[in-house]
Amino acid sequence: MGDKVNQQRRSVLKGAISASTLALVAASGLLLPQRLLAHWPSDAFNAETVEDALLALLGQAEIADDDALQFKVGSPPSYAVNGASVPIEIQSDLANIERIAVLVDKNPFALALSLEMTSAVKLPFKSMIKIAEDSDVIAVIRADGKLYKTTRFVEVDIGGCA
Amino acid sequence: MGLVKKDRIRAKLKSGDTTIRVLLAHPMHTGRGENDAGELIAAEFVQDFRCWRNDIEVLTIKCGTATARNPYFSFQLMGGERGDRITIRWVDNLGAKGTAETTVK
Image (cartoon, rainbow over all chains, first blue to last red; front, side, top):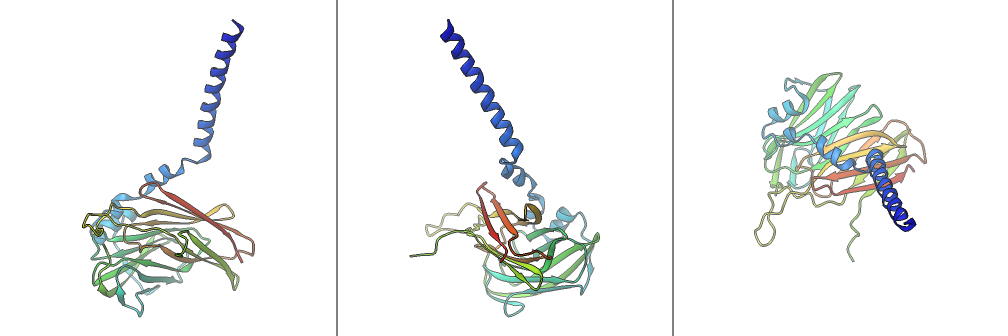
């Protein structure tokens, strides 16, 4: 009799413990990846044209062309031997930059990178992207709710979107 | 012996600001490339990259397939001092993730 009660008590305890650990794990953010994946803006990244990608990402595609944005692609500038890794560099003196997007016009999916900045981040930002063929590369900055864009044409020797 | 495949991160104090350079070890398959047998390689690319300074999130980068293999990012943070803890995490489209940490030098 006493054994049976003990057994039951054990399983009840066990159940309670695993339930509470699960709840803890969920709360502590160890299941973060699923949440992150859900936040990936697939509409924007699967858009095939620059306009669609910008609309999906920023909700607006009307842009003021501006020199407030310095943008370098390729090395030497506007030329790349290997399209699989083309260096880019973005520099700007604008204040309150909220977002930066890098798009490649002729790539199968235009949007390459989207940065969400906090006020702690300072430009220049450098990275490497893939470019399929000779194409316009566009950098877009949203600062104080306004969009600024700069376009550079890049020649690519070996396409790099495989 | 080849290089060990791992994420590399450097953080340096330069004239008052922190410069961070990150090199992730990731194949970044777009889903359009073929292997030697002519079969398509399934898409596998980093989607989400985040950076923290002393547990405060400072930067999020969303990547598409057009980010180059072994993604490289370099950026600066306002201010900062020696010993600040810089943490990065990435997640790819298959749910694989990686993390790296360093202190500002």
